[in-house]
Image (cartoon, rainbow, N blue to C red; front, side, top):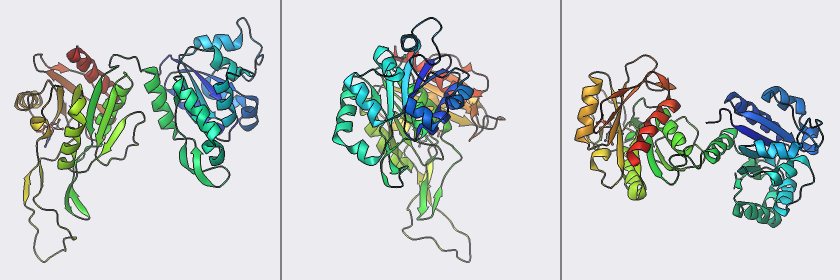
Amino acid sequence: MLKNKTIVLGVSGGIAAYKAADLASKLAQAGANVRVVMTWEATELVKPLTFQALTGNPVVTGMFEPAPLSAITHVSLADEADIVVIVPATANIIAKIAAGIADDILTCTVLATTAPIVLSPAMHNNMYVNPVTQENIARLKKRGFTIIPAVHGRLASGSIGYGRLPEITEIMGTIQQTLGKNGDLAGKRIVVTAGGTQEVIDPVRYIGNRSSGKMGYALAEAARDRGSAVTLITTPTALGIPAGMETVKVQSAIEMKDAVVKATAKTDALIMAAAVADYMPETASAQKIKKGAGGLTLELVKTPDILSEIKGKFLKIGFAAETQDLIANAQKKLTAKSLDMIVANDVSAKDSVFGSDNNKITIIKKDGKPQALPLMSKREAADKILDNVVKLLK
Ligand code: C5P
């Protein structure tokens, strides 16, 4: 996704400029060609050499710094860019861009580019909430800029308020989403479920399973990065909430069913990657169950089968995590649950188990023969699944 993309990373003079170094590093690690442009004030806070070392590219710090070899720097940068991202964007740079001022290399590049532009404002609370800053932000949004809202928290001044730069993963997510907005799922809506449900026994205990949520999250992010609007319905997981999608937090199978019914009122596809419990305690105890002399028997009842029960004109895609007779069991589920596609994975296989970053899947479509794929990252597997979704949606 980010591989071979040219990302012009503008750094303006806020203290969060040091966090832009981490972003530059992560983008370069993902294979992007990162061209850093710094305002003079930013160079007072972080040395250009830091960015040069992290990106492997010379850093542009002025209209004539470094001296241009052939083309005019701001025009060539503006042309080369697949995307321009400003992190952090100070109140001053936002105001200048909103007014069309081009008095330094960064504002000149912004004015000269036709690439999408993402701004991540970070500043003191009072400057951020100041109506003039908010008006400038609103103006830029109206002109098609993507603005990542600053978050609430501790600011460099020591006070608490709005103005913090969001997590770098959030900025990375927004960059990927922006780059992919005209992808092959543009204009589509996909609902993805992720994680393992938790069926409450009492206020401190539940019945859970070993699903990490990684496959569902990878699917949601991959769909987002191909232009789809995404609703991610997730159980509690250790993963960070992905940027650029609607997220609905649920715990039990019943809560998940309600969320799925609501979200699929308008959708093109439902991908049920979540590991939904098949049984739940008949009643959840209001108080913590005390240890007694003997054993404990829990009365379990069936949970609703969400995929089987859900109605609507959208693609239904299920997962079959199996430890034996993978294909036969998956094919049975495909028919029993009236699915368009099922993704089978052998959870007893080495490095394809719950919690792994990799997966070895077999994709089975309603009318097709099983398509067995080699071991790959969950993100790559997600894209293979979505390749099939794109075909089915045509
Ligand atoms: O029947 P089994 O649980 O193996 O089916 C797996 C598929 O069905 C998964 O896609 C899972 O998300 C979905 N499922 C469901 N509701 C349940 C159980 C599983 O939608 N109660």
